[in-house]
Length: 597
Image (tube, rainbow, N blue to C red; front, side, top):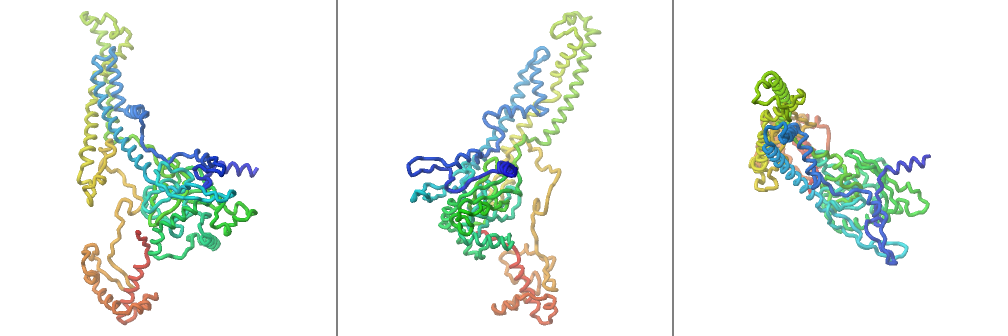
């Protein structure tokens, strides 16, 4: 029973194989026969990495657009008018006028929709053609008939749309991750930083770490095991802290990067993870390492009697590199693709492109519904009045020929009233002029093309000549709502406001330094530091002069932290300079700075 439950649970998980023997390429046996790996067949279950955010394609444009167009009250009203105008029994007018007016509005709206959707297709094409770096095994060297060895590994530049589940990709600093991946290895300390602004709007960098089991040296595996035994999960990869120079050198070491790629493709295993979901904060799964030649002894994979569970490691969101995130300050990172295209987290959170409409159109729809009801009541009243007039006065006027019951002059009162209600409906159609909507469509289109897109006040001030930074109106249906704000939703300071803090006063020990009226931001960049310090507080220049006169080796004694209240009570003149030195030393050291490299 337990085995059945386990197998059912396994069926719900996604299984992704990795390792060079599972690579989606042809293997050549010693006899010359060519066979395909089973991963190539398993891979067919996964969707392509090609994405499309457009609303229409060549076949669905006309039916979708017409349905959304005439689902609006105004255009449905004019559609009914047009159809009735071609019915000769009830229409005293020809149908050409209504048809041409409505056709003009539909063509203008359709052209706008087509242009806007072509822009979406263009942006999708740019995204799908973005360069991705994929690790490929070009050939296999068969030095031993019983054991295949890696021949040549190269990193090829391919399009994002060509990325497939199970492939190992390489991401450099400043590049977006092309698909949802499990981090395998990074340039420094097996940790990397990603910016998730495209997912959650947060600009602060998130720390990601490489998954366990794919270490490329025994030292890495031993460090991981040591930290897990000690319960130190904050630093799973316990390497010595490197200087910024060493870190920069490691991040730019191309030879080391190629060695990492060569080693990673020889690690074989399986990823068992949950099915695609829209959850950006949680991820469940585990990895099974079948063979890691670089740490076999430390992982216990070299002995035939080892338990298979010894090579299973859990996975969580801390090891996921999601599509749309940008790698920062990490040099490079290798990732194993697990979700592509429409199955990625960012695409799962995308809603369908709606048919946008402004507040003016919403207001007009309400007015048209009200006018249609009023018009219908007027038409019914006129039709009833016409019938009563015919019965009382019409038959006494033989030249009107009301005694001849033809297709328009029905003897049945219900048929007469219905037909004349429709006739009066057409006659009163000017109550809702279609020319109003023709004018609105032209004005909106002209606003976008000529005013918004070429407005010099909306351009980036730093580079107003760069056309790529000019404003682009992608939808003209909401021009009416520009600068109309009903609600402001803000989760914290900095979302819609500038998150800035300005220094006004400092507390050094028990001494308050500074003036509330002084503003550092008003000072010029070329002002001498002594002048700025004296403007802030008259005591600071004296403190700085005393500090500068002290020998640099003796400064270490001054930086020994003690009780600031005791030092401040000291009557000697050295107490305040010492506290100023300690204060600015702490201000310099005690903050988080992540330099761009």
